[in-house]
Length: 589
Picture 1: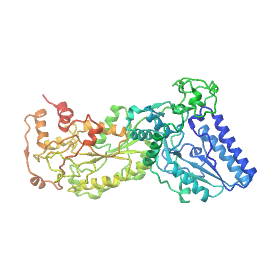
Picture 2: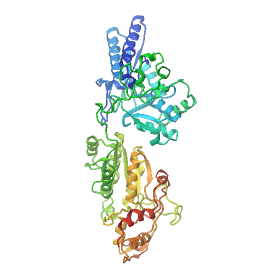
Picture 3: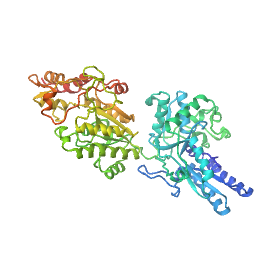
């Protein structure tokens, strides 16, 4: 079983001849030795997914074993060359060869030139985690024990002359790997992650079709978080296992592989020999170099963020576009209908977003009573369409920011009105009085099965635009009578920019998306009278009286926003936010 190789891509840009010597010539030596001695029943040649070259970002089917080999860096080129020799010895001399092409492997004992052990050791030493480029490159990671089991299956069940991909469908951006490791050590992402010069060429994605191996009975068993935790525990228990590895922890270890006279991209320490990940190399072969000019011929980097927004004609969707313009974020509005999967796929393939915002949905015109008589249409958009979008985003490894509703709860014995005890994210919805709320609760429950969705529960949205008929203040100011019940509410001027920041942080799961505290109808109208119209008057009526003029009951509740407040401590209470963002800017003399 031939695992031996020079495998670190970044080093191959420094001294590619070492890779040719080890990976091609070394493989040739082994093949010849096996041919001469005879009696070998299996020659398992361990190759890499990188021989296929870069996979298209929008590809939904991975490279299969018969796909063309299109290596893009010196390392993968030498592995592809070695494969040709293996195939030739199989055909010319009848050597019983089998080739494997695998995704990235991680786990205990791995040398720290590789991404995961490197990040773990850097975290343990309190040093920044250095990422090549913008960290958007996608890789697939398999835990070492699962890969060992794959080789056992291939050794005993694999067919001579065949190639087997060893892969996983679970892909991760390099930036997300860094963040996950920061989380293990309770480190702040922004201060712990540092972006450095990219490699001369850095494949965006490798994606494998592993069905052939699965047909032999193999399956990945170790989930990402479990494997990462096991790996961290090993390195924290064995910090000095590899001795002095400081040379491998520099941003670009290829400096240690660069022959004298060749320009590099980072500074290295004077004691190159002791830091080298290849101790057999004499330090006299290398010289210290400085950073190259940034005016090189590298292609322009992709934008850090590009948002695809659904709901262009809606209130929230329109405001999101304005926020993107103000922050200089690239964005486009989706043209496909949520219930049409082909149109959504087309949008994502053409726009290539980093995040998708779903601000589309049926709330009813002029209010939710419309949904009571248009149930199929409400289901089509609020349930089927939303799930469609989430599913397509998941297939394309894109985070979906989903604007949902908090109108799925009503005050009850455990959460009585005026108690200050709000419904939490994990509580089960208890309000199905309106069909609109019913569909929203239904789809929220189903979206829990998607790990790429961030659900934001909005309630009674308010903005500084008091002319907008969807604005809660505008609505109740035009009613003849209003009920007077304290409720959680969302000040869009404050919270929509927070939703953009949540996308940048790749936050997921369910979030109560309102300002802390509650405010009643009368309190809002008192402010309206004080700041906007001193002559304004209104009347109250009871819920029983209200029920006679509406079709569907309305939700009244308080949401617990401690989770959001912890993430964004600067978030204002509902009454403070009303004054700062709505009434003070609109105050009339």
